Image (cartoon, rainbow, N blue to C red):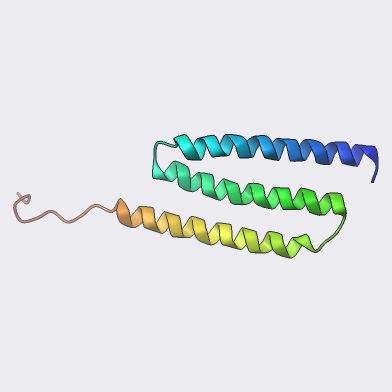
Length: 100
């Protein structure tokens, strides 16, 4: 690996770590459940990016299957959280006392 490759991979890892730190702040301080759900989805993307940097630095393709599994788990967790939020925020039918 040339020195330029190493520098670029180190820079990519630094950006991923910075994004992860900012993401943890967003998840911790997020005012709504939707902010936290988006944070979990971005965390899965950052894990995939980190695994990609590791795969590029070791020049092996065995990490690609792990990346696919993490992407699938991130997608299904995002869909599950979105469905949970949709059911929770669904308006209820008015009671007979509330009807005009």
